[in-house]
Image 1: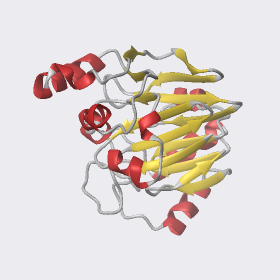
Image 2: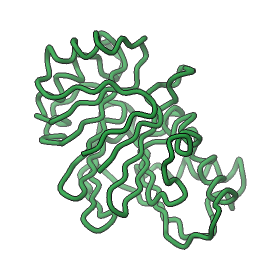
Image 3: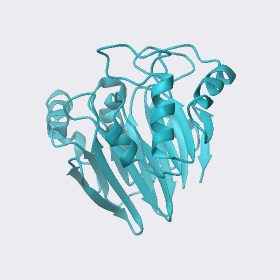
Image 4: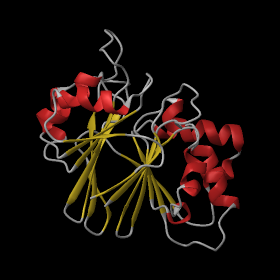
Length: 252
């Protein structure tokens, strides 16, 4: 498995960090996680096979996680070099239809009808679905929005977990248990009461409680000093720490 960061930032415009997005490659699996602003062009910038993308998982419907959904489908309709017959699946919570319905109303019904099969797959906490041979996706609820989900992707004996956006939750530690890589939001230096995001300490505690092998932090609302941030995380987490930045690839 390989994960590439398309966007390690937030909704705040940042010349170095796009909004949220990640790309997983494993065997025949080409899975994008979220598609915030800037991630579509990042797919090409980092040499990723976006034309062969098999799945897109949307963690929740805040604009910095789903803002380029229409642009992705526009590219599917008008920017493929060769004809494609392989199907594509859009995966998200049961209210995903509200988002796609709004985009169809804004941009036309045919936006989501490229010249290959498209399936919208709704998932709910506790679901586990097969994406490709020996590749599976599971989801769990996160305390962030009504529809927000964390995801666990298992393929060829490896596992990558992604928090999406969330506050600290012991149930998520169980869901992430033993993962080879946890991609965790790390929004704030210190916890902000009443704000459903993770602090540095929260992200480290979650990873330590889950006993994951590697913790990759991302989704920063603060200026990042990589060495200082890694040192802070290591106070609570005993595994390998990776500080996320756009274009970074992690091989498992």
